[in-house]
Image 1 (cartoon, helix red, strand yellow):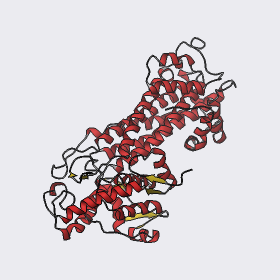
Image 2 (cartoon, rainbow, N blue to C red):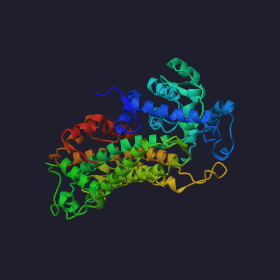
Image 3 (cartoon, one colour):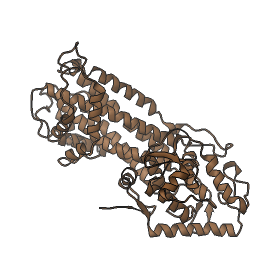
Amino acid sequence: MKNKVLISGNDLNLNEIIQVARHNMPMELSKEAVQNINRSRAIVEEIVDKEKTVYGINTGFGKFSDIKISPEDCKELQRNLILSHACGSGPLLSREEVRTIMLLRINALSKGYSGISIKTLNTLISMLNKGVHPCIPEKGSLGASGDLAPLAHMVLPMLGEGEAEYNGKILPSKEAMNLAGIEVIDLTYKEGLALINGTQVMTAIGALVLYDAIKLLKISDIAASLTMEALRGIRDAFDIRIHKLRPHDGQINTALNVLNMVEGSEYITTQGELRVQDAYTLRCIPQIHGASKDAVNYVKDKILTEVNSVTDNPIVTLEGDVISGGNFHGQPMALALDFLGIALSEMANVSERRLERLVNYQLNDLPAFLTKHGGLNSGFMITQYAAASLVSENKILAHPASVDSIPSSANQEDHVSMGTIAAVKSRRILDNVYRVIATEILASCQAIDFREELKLGQGTAIAYNIIRENNKFIEKDTIMYKEIDKCLEAIKSEKFLNSIEEKIKITV
């Protein structure tokens, strides 16, 4: 069992990110990373010694890149860069998001193409390992020239400026650093720019959403399977022979997942037994869910590439050249994170339509709104309203941020990605989708209880029993948000998915 994450800059994965971000696993640099950092720093120091004029080392930034800065002013230049760029606003990013941002920035700098000193990077590592978490506002990044504003907030505590969370309290940074036993530092040549010129904020938020999205896609297949049971869905549409004729991975995997979930069920029917066809939201589950899975797997490839990339500017090459380019531009992440939001939004869209089929007596053979005493009780009527509201909100949030751009820095930075906005939107969509899926699962269990007691499938039986441990059959109207909250907590728990996957492999 690993007790720390070793950082080389080349192979950081999603599970390691989660261990550091959510479970406080410590990290340390590999020997190779230390060597690469020191080599890169030596090149910067040689440039300074020879008094060459190089962007980011001894010049101004953005439109001021043509202005040379004297050696005696370079420390002040780097400090001023952080102070002036820390102008974010809005709610603070979560603790786990901040930890992921710090980890990803460390990982990128450890590749040894940024010119930062090992002392400065070790300060950031100590903050992460000891739990000093900079207060980083959510808003303020254009997603090109890096996540400049939020990353500047990340750096402030290293200088003894700004605020940080430590042991659950937000404190002035100097106090937090002192309590953790970490010395504040002065930045030198290129270090301020190396710390803030990158895509780590959008990538960090996106990586956490991606990890949760993969889990949510599995739960969506479980939800669909329970609804298939409740509505006595037709198995034939999931016959693997038809899906192999259109061999998208997500489609095939979804069909197999549902077939495995309902294996042995006495509720599931065959075509012509009760009806010839199901509506699309049942019959096309493999095609709909599968498309979102394929999209999420595309995003996974893009995010893991970005996690292990050099994204600052200028870049110090192995040959000793310092090249000003555009690796900080967030467009690869912006498009991918917009796609992630769209893919997740569709999962709520189809789930809400299945929920409608569960509660609408005109579309099934169940009591109206899944209540015994309709009229006196409203049952699940307004759960569909609430789900529809979340779905409609998602449609607005799913509008791509990446199609927008606005010039900055006196038109030097004249096309920007808005990737961080895309990342934040995908997180909000994810939260909405989880609640819609939880509502569908709760309704499907209620519907199953109105049926003659038959045998559920091998996977759906496990899911049903876990839900029923906390959510009992609703005999009469109760405070419904509390019931949905309990169901949401249950499906997010490790027990829910792990218990099912001990019996059935669920593939995304």
